[in-house]
Amino acid sequence: MTVPNERQSSDILLDVSDLHVSFAAYAGEVQAVRGAGFTLRRGETIAIVGESGSGKSVTARSVMRLLPPSIAKIKKGSIRYKEKELTALSEKEMRKLRGSEISIIFQDAMTALNPTVTIGEQLIEGIVRHENITRADARKRAVDMLQLVGIRDPETRLKQHLHQFSGGMRQRIMIAIAAIGNPSVIIADEPTTALDVTIQAQILDLFKLLQQKTGVSIIMITHDLGVVASIADRVNVMYAGKIVESGPVRDIFRNPQHSYTRALLAAMPRLDRDRSIPLQAIPGTPPDLFAPPQGCAFAARCPNAMEVCGVAQPETTQLPGGHEVDCWLQDPRAKQVIPPLIKTISETAVSIDK
Image (cartoon, rainbow, N blue to C red; front, side, top):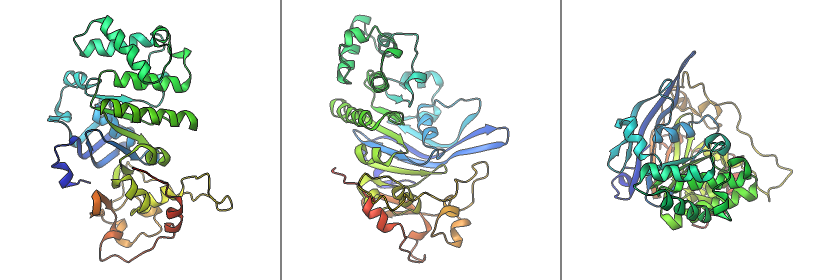
């Protein structure tokens, strides 16, 4: 899925096009990402949203070239960062980019960070590795970064280990480590999943503050549509390895065009919803990516599926305002359907002030 006009813009920082990623397994080849594409502009936050197994994290790690080479392979496609084609870079060249140009924040700080080394050493290590800077200057920057992410008494905290921090504080440290090298892009892979709603809101506010202070571009990987509505400028809806709908977050929430997007929105809980009306679960299960379907991957679960949906890939329809959707129902020859979820969707749409 591509937007030609957007790709000509000088604001484009990262351009992923027709990405195909597969994993070798005993049962065969898992086609985890099947032609995904998106763009990221300078100073922008985009979200990639979908169910577990949709290919979100694989796409993110492909950008960083962090997939295990023994089992994972980028079979096709382009990942272009500024003037560099990342799929063509050596591992040594990628190491220079990681942290200094593109950083990633993982979901679980306890497994992503080293529990045997102090927080200060982990912060300082990244700066010294990428920049010609003394350890004293690196330490000063580490103190400043901890203050920026809201950690009090940073001088003392630098000497402490990961187990001495709460879950929310660990996530702040992850953000500090990702941001301390002044990267142009930060990929946040489910950074708020394990946190309660209060701490989650604080972490999202921290991302906004960081973007205001540094101008960093953010890719937010999540399954939580509340996070998307809170922080993203544009959203890419991913299903079975493909991005099936993309566009400005307001358009996607107010006027979803793909049946999968509508189903996700209908399943989103709201505090003010009528408790007598149950949340609408999405029936069925995602397709087997050992042998992906020939047609639309969502056809077997779609209440509006037509015969063509099961036999041919839907074409991309360009809608006003950079809104795109891959769905046969957008074809002028298709039957005109008002999905039964529409009323629920309009009631569920959150207030987005952008």
